[in-house]
Length: 480
Ligand code: FAD
Image 1 (cartoon, rainbow, N blue to C red):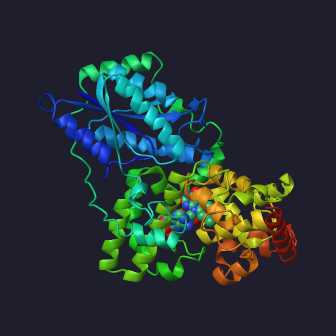
Image 2 (cartoon, rainbow, N blue to C red; image 1 turned 180 degrees about the vertical axis):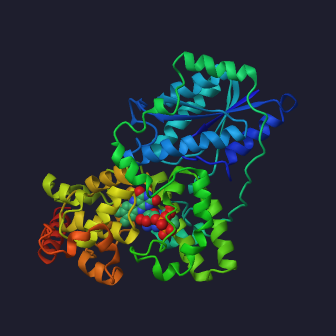
Image 3 (spheres, rainbow, N blue to C red; image 1 turned 45 degrees about the vertical axis):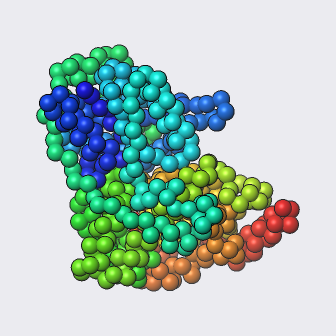
């Protein structure tokens, strides 16, 4: 008997419910001789007449690089567990049933995903498998709490973080599952079936996924100086968590301090670490060397991620549709030259330029600077927040289908729990406050303080552009 494990954003072996169940199933069969085969699909082309695109948002370039490397690493770990990892491209509604049929898999397992378009696709795959006489089981694993477990008294969903957090933090977090014990490895029958699927063109190797197709080699080399994708490196990063947690409540807003935050976001994005593993790690830290307030402050951020995912569960297309509908008529003034200056870190506003260059060169940006950069873009520069969100989506190694659009909506004022519109970040004041020694700006924009370096004058006057943004907002409200 064979179980097919369809992996998506859960590229790990520790604390993996679907993997654990698949291995237990294999061990319980044929005197312990059942097989597990893992499949990862570069999903494309799934559409529906009614809903349009089905499935996850297509990965941005930086995330594709991450997944390519993380999948290579996972291949080795799964092989050690006696599980071959195979790859395919295309519409999961064709690929999953085809691979399951080729392997004669009686069960298919996967970790749940929560965005409406992905859920719709997964439901269709489940139906198709059922029609072919195969079982399909979905497991939790990407969140601390299932979105339907956290509801308001009236049974609806929360649109404001604080009450959401209060309710979600009440849901118990169960124990971390260990890495399961290895199977003997695939049987000759399964190996032959995989070879046949490869010959038939259903399966490819990781290179065949072409995840690196749009990224130049120099960019990949630069980003690789900052990150090592893969579960093993993720576990090393987890070992260093206490360093980031120590003093987190105070230091988390200081972008120039490399340890001011955990930098675990791409690990959560790709599922190299589960949120449950991190929740328990923070709790342990708070019970030993780290101040309990710091551990709590950090865990609270994990619940921000939960909150974003709860919104992404309830509202489709958060990357384009404002949660406050009146923002659909906001009088933005798209200007490609201005947007380009922002993308390149050439706005003449140092903190934002430092952040945008950190993003371009390392695939990541500190949260405080993300807020300042996003605010400048959609408020002072009056560029549609969707365009900035799309740039982040393409360039962040942690680009997340919930966190990114929800955060952009929060900054732009269109979000459910957005700060009041008049809260417009002044990047110069933010730099004085959070980069007081200038370390961050000096690292990423070294020419900013050199005379005749050609560093540009600010592309917008902060005071005048703030007023223009407030006027635009007032015009939107008047028209609503
Ligand atoms: P830590 O401070 O160590 O926090 C631990 C974890 O908590 C993070 O890894 C993350 O999963 C979660 N978290 C922290 N802050 C937030 C937050 N404000 N909202 C939701 N979850 C949070 N985060 C992403 O993971 N992916 C994105 O695509 C993304 N886009 C963003 C865009 C904008 C405009 C803004 C303002 C924020 C965005 N964030 C995004 C949230 C936040 O900036 C990052 O999660 C954080 O900087 C990651 O660094 P860290 O792992 O060191 O965070």
